[in-house]
Length: 502
Image 1: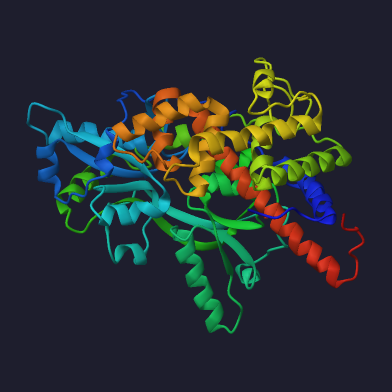
Image 2: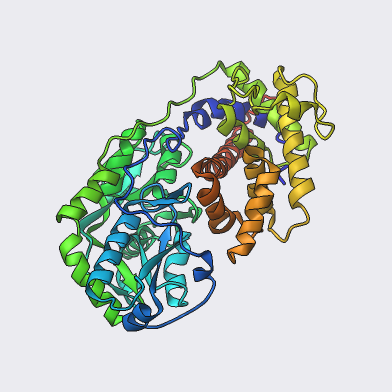
């Protein structure tokens, strides 16, 4: 748990919230859902992921299923009340249709079982026999080709470009990246591209790019949002995705002339002992890649269609936001909670706006219901005041955590993710989701890739997106705190530390 910041740090953090955290825009809640696929199917049995199996295409036809590992993403694959959607999902379902038309001869259709995983599990899961295809905007790289096979390209001439935000220095050429930090997922092709750039810098006697590991649960569009807010100075992103998502983030700048990889290809991945499956996929992709009728429809649907962004928060005056952050820090500390967690919940609930009221009667920064505040486990009378509202929210978070999740086998982060879900959906509903997760051979003590899949299937996207947004904002507020700590230390070194300690 983080310690309580000094008075000076709290003031600096409050100012940073004005310039950064409140600039975050949650676009998922405001997006128009893409049109439903022509043919929908219920989500696959989750226990398909828990058993390792290796066999080629004929054996898959005989057993009636092909397993596809995909990232859970608002672009490539997501669930909404049992309906599966996304660019990768729709392409896989079209491949399923081709398999059943051209290869299956038994009484039952072959199903493509879509298994959502984090990006760092796509290739390891494939190699471990937990899936037969890895799909979801995977770039073909020599490093990956050393252990897996790829289909013919779904998309060609892909560029990985620099994207900068308001906190980045001026960048005019690729050489300007020498010595600068870039946030990047280790599992991404961007990471391999930047390592190659660093080798070139080293050969030239120059400092390499500082590679800052990004959380593997954050998709490119999540990182782009942090860049837009000034919390992350720069990232690398595929140009075709960056061009679409940049329309929602006015403070990002794309640099198509500064590319760390050009002429790349996106494809599906297979184990090397699956030549039959790869051949079937190649035949399908030849007719349905980008440039074909179906390929163009799907790419246009998910990467060209206009989808409105949610409105950003109206900025309050600096003193009001300082008071909000100070109250969050104080009550989080009193209840033993990492203060960025409380700030993240408050930001997701109300954009830290004490004036916010919901149709259901929820009040203030933490959107506390009067009945919740009156419960003996919370017992805060004045939720109309900023201080009382934040105290009630922090106390309720601590109660949910300790009553329902502290004795679980979850790690501490997962206990808090489950707590966030309970704050949104209620503890009884989360208990039911965990029970159903156990029935589906999923881990009831882990949120990402486990209980969240049941939530998406049974109650829709709201709680799934709520937890993902809170987690994203938790990371964002942590970055603010880190930046302000460095700034505070710099002021001390310069003799400008004028704020007295309490």
